[in-house]
Structures are given as structure tokens and as C-alpha cells.
Image 1 (tube, one colour):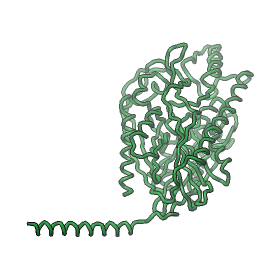
Image 2 (image 1 turned 90 degrees about the vertical axis):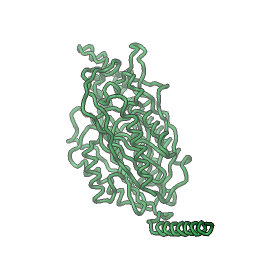
Image 3 (image 1 turned 135 degrees about the vertical axis):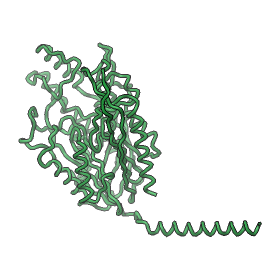
Image 4 (image 1 turned 30 degrees about the vertical axis):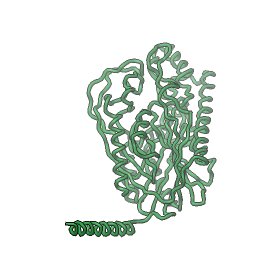
Length: 462
């Protein structure tokens, strides 16, 4: 018996040795991410509409619109981070871009994150050569690949604030700065640089609504453009700063004139014409008397506030790049995954911006597109809608990865409208009453869906 056990133990050891040898051989045969295997390229392409393509009501260009792209290559796989100064991008645009990037640039569709900056000052103009310029930015970035390393870090910026408050006069829910409300101040920063430390690009993620310049009725990239332009000017040498929209469904700029003096002026002007807009918010600067000296001052101050907030966010990104980054990686796994989740839908039957519960009927279920891109030890979770901040915070707590962020308005645009967290459905804010989703589904579906995709991507990297 003892001899048999000994022989059995010997056979187990032999099998283990053979297995270890086989694993070593397999590892040796796998593509190796060498110390300097990472390559990165970046590009920026102007997509400001021509004068002939400007829609009615636009009063000129305050600052240009751009598409910015970063392409990352590790020798065996490629990924891309693309940001467009647009309110939103349709699923069709995303599908056509990823199909072309996959066939012409060897970037798998699941490895490309296409994010709208959500500026409210970019008209929905998608004709002409818009998609060609979009692809051109990705191609230029791919053509400019050079040896690189990357590093991740986080900082804090206080230019955002929760925007759901109880109006002190009406005692009903309205839009304004709620300093006690949920609001993640994290700025996530992913820096790409040459082996010698020269900047190539930076990808940064922050949760704030780009609505500062909306009343001006001028073309503008709003806070994302102001911040990226500031960062690029500071870095120099053609470095590109790519904005990523965090979970800002309930996050406004901390200084936002539209909810104060400008709104009161507009309400009075409409009332004098016999129309009550006290529970509405006309788009842009519609209805403002631009010959009113006070209106002129307030609109001019909006331009100043936009530049100031962009500077403040840009300075925090630069601070993180200088002092708060983790050790650079010169080789990194690149891989993505995507899925969609479906939640029950509803259709609103009444009107009114906020303050009162809506009435609804059942509607078709709504699909929400989810995606995950892993770059080394960094994970970006993408959602194609405007997501409330607490959902992103829950995702970052749930995912077993330290360096994680959520990019919203990414890879198309869901038909959901806003996606509130479950608890927010008790608030009669305009985001909640206008949401086309029934409560009780989307928050958990998004978080669990993204966590599942992270697990899938991690399994694929083994």
C-alpha cells in the first residue's frame, strides 16, 4: 500500500512537472509585452460647421468644435479613446466608425470608446464630411504611433455640484446648486508620454454638465473645450487632451447663471407676452432680449465663467499629471467587451419641467448599451446615456479594480433620456419626470452589467 501511494505521489509530481513545463512553454510562445512595446498616437481634427451649414439661430462661433483621438497599441492589440464636441452621437455613427476602424486600422469595435462631450452649444449637424473627419482623427492618431508609456492618477475638482434642490419659494424640486447632494469630485487622469517623459496625450474623466455657454446661442465646446484647450496649450508640442464625460446626469457647473438672474428675466419677459414659462426652460437663449443691458452683462459673464471653470479643471489635470500619477507602464494589456441590458420603459402623458410627479403609461422596453475597455490596470466602463452620479460611484465600489471610471454618452445614445439612480425617483426633478425608464431596474442592471464585462475582459487576459 505504501509503495502504491509512493508511486501515485510520484506520478502526481511527474504530471505537475509536465504541466508546469507546458505552461512555461505556452507562456514563452505567447506574444510578450516587452518593456517598450507600448505605442501611442494622438490627433485633433476641427469639426466646426461651416457658415453655410450653421442652423438658424446660431450667432457665430465662440470657440471651435473638435474630435480628439488617442490610439494605443501594445504589439498584439489596439484600442482607441475618441471624444467629440457634440451633445450626443447616434448609435449609427458609432457603428459606422467602429466598423471602419476595425477593417482599416485593426481596432476591434469593442476596443473603441466614442464619447460625446455633451456640450449644449453644438448644433446637431451631422451632414457633409462630419463622419469622414471623425474617422480622420482616429486614423491620424494610428498613423502617429510612437513608443510610449502610460500612467494613471486621480485628483479632485470642485467645479461641479449636484443640481437637484428644493426651491425655497415653491418648496418643490427644481434645478440649482445642492451643496449637500451626491457629487463625485474625482478627476481621473490617464497620461500618455514618450519614454523620455514628453507628453503625447492625456485622457481625463469628470462629471459636470457642459451647459455654461448654452444661453449664448453660439458654437462652443463649453467646459470640455475650455479645459482641453488649456491643457493642450500648457503641454505644447502637439499633445492632445481628450475629455471623457463622467456620470453628470445630475451634476451642473457650480456657477450656472441660467438658473438665476437670466431665468428670472426670461420668465418676466415671457409673462409680459402672455406666456407662463415658470415651470419650463426654453432651449438656449430663446426669448432673451439681447438689447437689454443687463442681459448683455450676464451673457458676457457666462463666457468668463466658462473659461474660468475650464482653467480650474485643466489645472487640476495638470497637477495630477505632475505629481499624483502611479508608476508608468511601458507594456499593457488592451481588451474590451460590450453588451446591452434592457429595462421597462414608460411614456409621459403630461407636461411641466419639475416640481410635480409625472403621469405615465407603459412603453416599449429600452436597451442600454454597455462597454468596458481595459488598458493595463485601468478600466473604463461606458454607458450610452446620461447617468446619475451615484450609479457611477456604486460601479467604482463594486468593480474589483482600483483604477476605474465611468464614461457616459459613450458608444451611441440610448432612448432612455436620463438614467436616475433608484432613490432619486422620489425627487420630482426634470431629469426624473422626463426619464423614459421605469424605476427599479437601470441602476442595478448597469452596475452588474459593467462588473460582469470587467470580469470577462480580465478572464480574456489570462
